[in-house]
Length: 182
Image 1: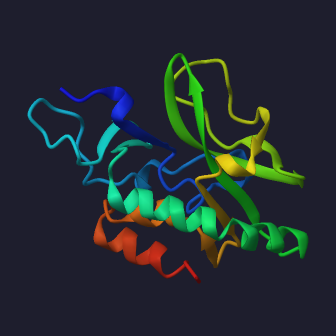
Image 2: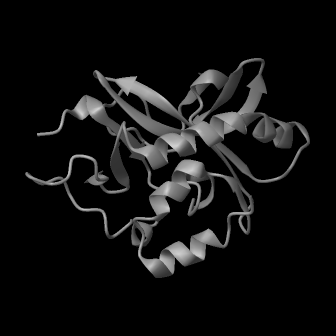
């Protein structure tokens, strides 16, 4: 069996891609269909569906780790777009721990204050009830694992979301791939 601590939980799969307005609701039609439920004997390195819109990736997943690295390296660009007033919905992904479990969740950005980013949780965490969607939080820039600027017809960043698109049916993947502009 797989050790749960060896997983990266990616909450609200592709949240920023098909965000339904500011409330953070997701269309269940966009759930990656090819991600299987966890089952005995399955490949422990393969992504697996934990629940609706939540997918677990192994901490050693090279594609996901490379995406996080690219996002961290380009975070100054994201902050500069905010500073320059580029319009759109700004979100960051960060690790959130509760009940001894860590998931990686999106925060809708409200502002930058030094090394901290202010915002509101963009979806409900799955590892407990301490935090709720819409709850205000501060995240250290050093803890950001991904960022996304969604302008409706164009998306910048979203490097971990791009990795997750590989699990989508071809027609959905093609629709979303066209939106990424960098």
